[in-house]
Structures are given as C-alpha cells and as structure tokens.
Length: 470
Picture 1 (cartoon, rainbow, N blue to C red):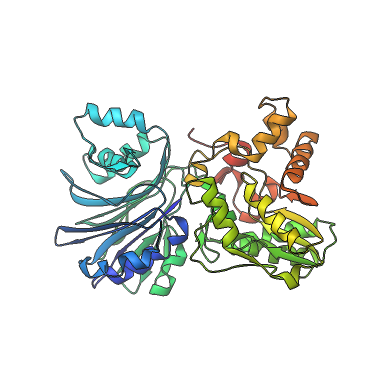
Picture 2: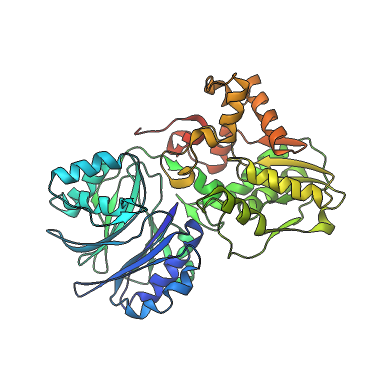
C-alpha cells in the first residue's frame, strides 16, 4: 500500500514529521521520503528502506528538514515526494495511488509538452504523473479535479506549498486521510490516526471521498474541492492493513476484527482446546472468536519483532515465504497435542498458510481449524497495491475455480455466494490445498455488519467484483 503524513506547526516541524511518517512504516518497505518548505525553499530527502528501517535512514536527515510545514511518505511503490516548480508556485507532492491508465496519461502529458524526469522501476513515476496533472490546472483546486477526472484506479495525495498543506482524498475514498489538531493551530494530516496520537494531536476531521482541503495555521481546515456523493473505502483497511488502534471513518480497526471473530465464533460448532491468532492482524479476530465460541484464547504463535516486513511486501514469492516463516515462532508447549482454531485475516495464494500449517503439525498440533475474517478473494485488487503483484490467476480461489470448471474461469457469481454448492466445493478444495482439518470464511454480510457502514460505502471488489468508477 503506502502511507502519508503531513504537519504544519508553530515551531520547526521536523521532529513531528519524522515520527508521524515513521508510524506508517507497516504500510510499505520500498521507499520513504520527507519534504519541508522554509520561506519558499524546498528541502527533500528520499531513501531506499528495503533493507533497513525508516528510523535508521532518516535520523540525521531531520536536522536538514527546515521549516514549519512538511509532508512524508512510506511508499511501497515509487520514490517520492516529488518537488515541482510551476506556475502554481513551488510545491512537493506525495501519494498513495494505483494508476491503471498510466500509458494513456503519459501520452496526455507529452501532448501538452510536459516532460517526465523520474522513473520508478524503469517506468513512469506515478507521483510525478500526478504532479504534472496538477500543474495542468489553473489553481491547485483545478489541478486536483484534473487528477480525479483522468486517473483510473485510486489516488490520495498531500501537497506542501507556501499556502499550507493540501490533503486530497481519492475520488471514491478508497484510501483514507484524516486531520488532527494540537492546541489552537498545529495540524497533522495522515493516512492513519494512530500516527499522531503520541505527538499530542486529536482527531479533528475525516477528509471525505473526493474532497480536498487546505490546512493553514491561520484559518485551519478549508475545503477547496467539494466531496463526491459516493464513497467506497477499502474494506481491507479494517481486515488487514490498519494498525490495530487506527480509526477509519471513526471506526476502530481492532473492534472490527473483534466483531468479525465474535460473529464467527457464535455460529461455529467446532470443538477445540484453544483459539490462536496469526499475528498481527489475526489476533483481534481470535480474541473475538474466543468470546463468541467460549473456547479459551492462547498465544500459540508469536511474532518475533516488528523488524520483519509484512509478508505481502517483498517482491518475489521466495522472499515472501521466507518472511512469513521467519517472523512467526511457534510455542511448542502450548500447541503440542492440542486441537487448535487459528484465526487469520485472509488467504491470497495459500502458500504461506500451507507452510505455516506444515510447521504447526510438525510442532505437535493434533487438529487445525482455520477461520478467516473475510470472504474468499475472487478478484485481484484494481485500486490499491494489495495485489499489485497478484494477478487474478495467482489467487488460490481462481486456481480452484478453474479446476472445478474443467479448465475455465466462469460462473464466478456462484462461487462468491456462500449459500451455493459451488462455494462449498471451492472452500473444500482450498481446505485440501492448505492441508487443514476444517476451513471457514466469514460472509460478505458479516464483514459489512462488523465494519458498520452500508455495503455501498465499502469497496468489496476483491470479494464480489463490484465497485464504482471502473
């Protein structure tokens, strides 16, 4: 994915910017960057963080980040922020984006005699493309609307400029932005509310879908682009991405995970000695499942430290499998000879779960019952980089459906409906593939109930293929 943080204060902002950006480190492991503005002068630092943590690369850079306002990004894609000098003035921009029509937009910019100077893994840098689309406008507000008009996919971004900080949320709100306030006129804007709590900020305003706001010390939060009347925020923010204490749309991620587990536990009839969560995002669900089922919770698997990346982040499958294996340590005395329920957020390819299951049986677990907080993933994500390297055919559901349908991908609606025999056959095939005794997923209805928003306000494309703005 990626995470954004910005701050504007009555004092030098470097320390707030450093810690606020670092608190988004669970959202990306490829690049990180900071940019500040001081009397019109831009300061910029970008580092590769694939083999080290954010702190180690930026600890000394903050002494160079002068000024009372700045933006930062933890990026799982391109090197950013991008600094521009244009008819709109000097500004820096950073983004969380997945642009599906980059080639089309490259052509549009080149036809307007604009040029590209940055590359991201040999291709056009998406954030530079966003910057060029912004500068096609007569004002920042006009440029932001130009971005919304042309980008297919999703894009949220922050701009730091002489006027202040501009926060622009994706047209359909698939990725979040929230503003916090400290005292009278210190403001932070972030992807995650948890990033500014220890800096003394309190949540002031959730930026709406398609809305852009200008944040200044003098006038606070001013709307410069009106919001869209439709929202489809990514449901996976609550299922997996979000740090447990984060709030999206004022809804706490850990509470949603707990409700997902509790609902499944109430309706499950499996007999087991203990419930265990696969760290980290499976723990909240496991606690809820234990409450709903009455089966005790124990920590049978522990995560060593936060120094291991989240296992979706490494580029190749071999590295992903290694991370998934090395970061989780089984507690043999808790597991040996027991029937265990293991709660996890999702099954994507199935390879990591299969390897974890083999490890658990090798440590003496008698029976393994896996419970998944969301429905089966039937479609690759079109709007976030959750499945940027995962085509539809890489999903375990697609492989199973192809097998059940005699070598074809068809009849997807039936496989998305938990009441059909096709769905039951798919789940059984997945169970066999990962090698567990029983396997269950939550339904889409249960997911939406746990989040607490109407289904039309939540993006469920990866489960049922539906979405706005395709």
